[in-house]
Amino acid sequence: MKTWLRWVFIVISVGGGFTGIAIISEAMFRQEASLATWMIYGIAMILYLFTVVSGLIFADNPRRTLPLTVALLVQIPWVSSPIIVYSFCAGFRIAAGLLDGKIVLNWRLGSYVEIFLFGSSHPWGAGINFFAVLALILLLRYSRTPNKSPEPTPVGAGSSASRTTL
Image (cartoon, rainbow, N blue to C red; front, side):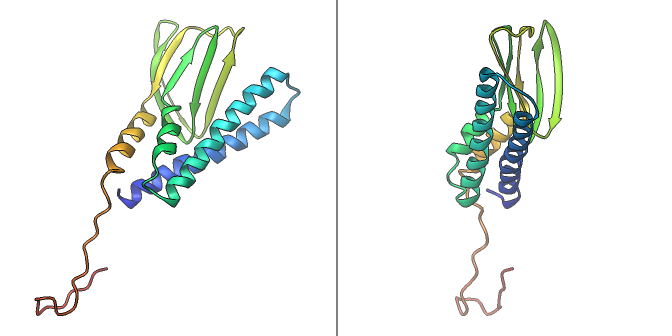
């Protein structure tokens, strides 16, 4: 995998996850909340913590992609209904879908989470975070190919010209 692509994955997972942790932490201490709201905050915090940890694992060892794969998978869908609302992104989002019978497109720079269970008045809809899909495809495709650097030629190995590798 190319170094720049590894850095992109690390920035969106670690940076996006920490941004989400900051947002949820602020919301937790800003208002009085019911037990159900604290449970939703807890779910969101776990998702963001998992995203940060998955990025750190990937930064430590680029061959360990399973946690980062899961972190990207949970960012792909968004669902809206009176029963459940779920939308989660860490870092960046470009999404499209159907909401209340209309096509919706949106993007977001930063982290965003929306989770509601039972009793919400949200319309029916569903969509896909295409940025997360693209990131997942790139991760799965390029994590299988190592970053091939030219090997330095040993001195006196059949060539009269000297070579240096930068």
